Image (cartoon, rainbow, N blue to C red; front, side, top):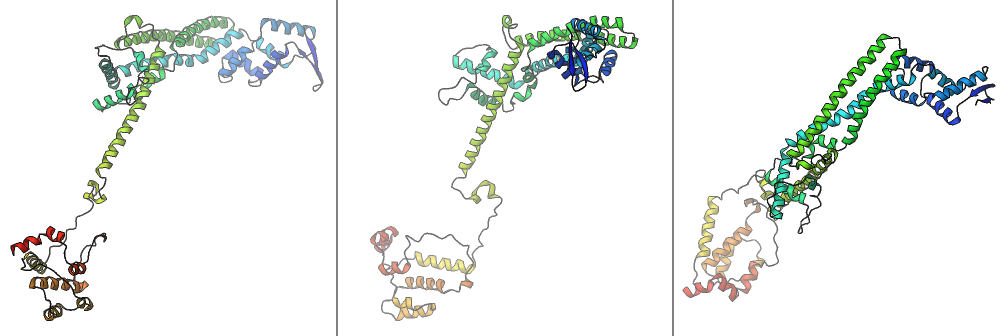
Length: 473
């Protein structure tokens, strides 16, 4: 039933047939579409530059039904002098196109086919590539062999293999001493026995991509693609009944022929890849009865997650080894000066002291003979106050004073004192330059003067062996 609505803004009446919800949806859709006459020309010519793929899908939702066409025509007959509303005018323009829905469906299939085919072909190629990467990967074989050897050792058995689902549990199984996972011990053994092995995860990227694809849905999409191709042939038959351009007919026909051939090839590829996957499971040791029960997505997910865990654990083990090696290097140089380490041995040149002169060697020999000579009396050196108050005097004056004094010592003692005084009174500029030594503690040091004044204790005399010299004398 027609409804007459007066627009106070436009000062004219409009003929509205559609309900408000449908009318609003059409008006909103028209805002993102070109003009009505442009839409009509583009649909007739399949001009993809005028209307995008999203625009075609939008128009498909706005195609008028047979009931809506009839209601609009009846309203026009009842009120021929009233113009139609914007939504009603748009539907009338679309209804004037012959085979509108078949045209739109055929056009949408033509624009979507490339992406639909890509969504099916790429996962199949990744699965094929992933099986090749796993079958030729040496690290994966060594990991499986190490896990099998550990399992046989722990269970005291000689099993020929294990189920692939066990790879999900190697992170959960831990030892009772250090609480490290079975995967941690596996990584340590693999790195120890096969140092050239890789992290596995970076070598199987195709398996990781395949783990994110639902291959059961992919099979359904392939079947759906074949159905849409067959429906497009039917739509083409309907379009050619009203189409007069031969070039457009030939173009659409060639396109559908090519799509049909490619879909047939895609089905063959899908069947062969799935069969190869089943053969790959047999290659891994899976029992034949359970091969067809294993899903492609779950298998790829197990391998992908295990390889990621292996890479993480391997990096942790390598980091721990580097830290231990650094700690061992540090303990080797603990308590040593930096110049004593191997790193600085070649950098710091040795500076040997110059050889002593002939005079120094002669004085050394004389002092050595004096100190090693045997005396007839026990040594009891005393230094008078007069010697301290004399200041710096010559060795001749010192010797003269000692000869005049009443308690003169023997010749050996006099010679020692003369040399000591000579070394003290020598000009500092004349002394040979000696390297600066580090200051030592003066806590337990005793001066020569105090020793000569108080004499030597019996323990010191016994330690020095002077009592034996007295016995010999």
